[in-house]
Image 1: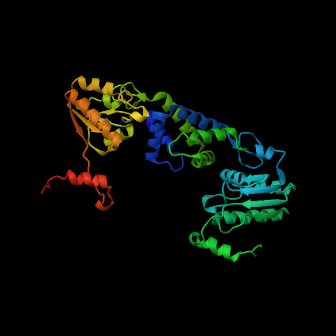
Image 2: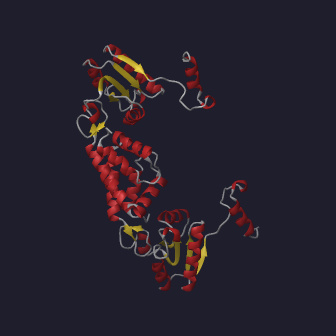
Image 3: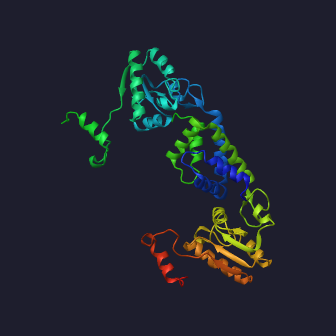
Length: 200
Length: 200
């Protein structure tokens, strides 16, 4: 191999990014060195800073530089509502799509016994303590509609009921703008089975 | 926005990578912070090191940490052959696919007057001096078979002839393993027009 070792190291290191294989890593490295060295330097510095500086909020487990994240620390959020999501990305999606003004709890995963992910890994002891504190009236369970997400939702609902908190789930059914013909059978069957009286 | 500023900076910085938009950048940042902080740190360090340490070989213009890259400095390469390619990736592809043991000249682009890329940007003065030195018997022109690549090839061939060096081009035609039915018309027409007598 005749390529410069630093370049090889960079290509190898880029492969830690999700969805980036040898070819893409090579293209990224060449692109940065050829056309955007400033961007490359900025990214390098940002990576090290984020890895060193970003931890988890001790209230909601979302990523945070501070011990308590700005959402949890905010005085303008409705502390009676708590929404459990699997990941920070899900939290962001809800924050951006809805007018939700309550608080969040980020599981950072879903129950998956085969991968060794149990209640402890999802911080459910923390969540149980939080629910036991009182103050939360409704636990909105927004896990993904997958098998593991459903199992996690079931567990969370029990946890909520034990603490006397009302659990709720996001509605399942046809996505807006979807065409019946192309919607998967499971969703269609569910939407059909849980049909509601039409408004007028 | 409630996300940690360091995280936002990281997401923004990741977008300098080719083919990475807002969503992918977010996914990459979350993935690194959730599952691979070591990889993230390593990538950050590798980026800064490569951006600071990797320059261009003064002989062939390929990326190199040293003033002259290992290929140009090698005593075992055939200095009579010089292969001009558009990018370091092309050089690597030829090196890996063929048994070529000559030297390279990396243009780091192609003639593209509309983008302000002329002979000077491609280091063609350096190439002209190299050809004038004598010692090179054949300039293998391996630019891409695109309009700009062809224009560049034409220019390089002239340069070679002026210096008394024989220019050659990679063969054009059907790719091996391709099916006639699916090959683009231009390639098919070219392959048909430049058909050769069948061997026996």
